[in-house]
Amino acid sequence: QVQFVESGGGLVQPGGSLRLSCAASGFTFSSYTINWYRQAPGKERELVASITSGAGSTGYADSVKGRFTISRDNAKTTLYLQMNNLKPEDTAVYYCHARIKLISYWGQGTQVTVSS
Image (cartoon, rainbow, N blue to C red; front, side):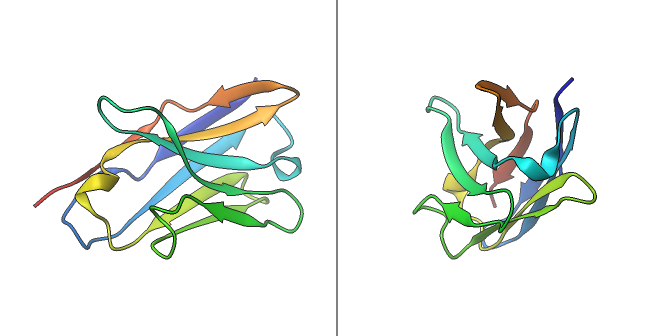
């Protein structure tokens, strides 16, 4: 079955960096667009970044452009999110997501807290 396992979250000071990983299994990873979403307390889940299959074109929410970088390693079936210059408003649970044959799949999430 499709599975995503996120890791790499934690507590970091403003201006710091974190690298999130998402290990995927149960489907042909290289064939699908994969996304990072996040959900802050009391807020809607929002799309942070996406990376397509094939050429690996990327897209970002305006709030993270220039600070976050999404990448993928198809051989390792792993998705990454490099987060630099973190801000308190980046505090959220971060989730992997893919839509496979019209069904949305989510990981369990990893908590990122940005605080001094």
